[in-house]
Image 1 (cartoon, rainbow, N blue to C red):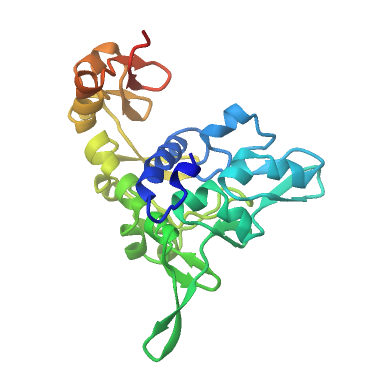
Image 2: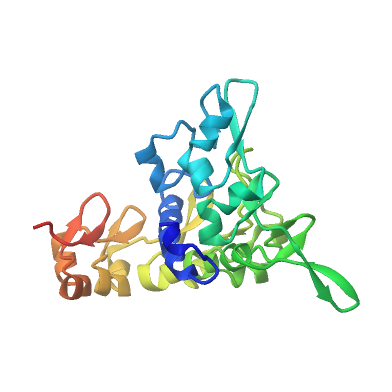
Length: 284
């Protein structure tokens, strides 16, 4: 998959939706939306890591470098012991970040404060040199303002021009409002957050998928659906068969949902997958 999108700046679209799907699934689960191990590949790889990014092994370097969630996805390939039998995986080189999925997907290709992100660049401004932030972190997560040696989402304006705001309602800067909180000492702060139902109502997840209300999760507020009637009125019901409330989101809960959808008529996805809440093609 990485090879197929070898030039992320030119082929951003082929990377955007798969990773947004992963992160969206994490945000509505019991796992933290920011937890590094909340990635689809973890279950298959059986990574020896805890939910807050600590590797459980004696050989920290080999465990972190062999971890799909830590190294392959997040570029956190260097391991150090915390003195209590755990390993903390961090990003210490641009080379590790440059080969990680977050670089290809989001442009987070540089090691900054132990994580893969983007360092401010020197640019020509009126009267001399200045610092500016460009690329994936700005485009996707609103980190468009240079602050020290990092790019951060310093204002609501930064957040509102990001993909996260358009897609998931994370349109408010916790830095601007002084409400930032870390889920654990190992995880970075997501500076763009959901602050109210107004954020949810402006998102694609609300307009197309019915997640228009605010709920409190393990890591703060996020957007959810609340009723069958709201789900039935969405465009995702018509196109994807996701017409009933399933937990806190709209999903396909029966074959009838799928059979009435465009996905069935146009793509033969007429069976619902009970564990996923989506319509799939029948296996012949």
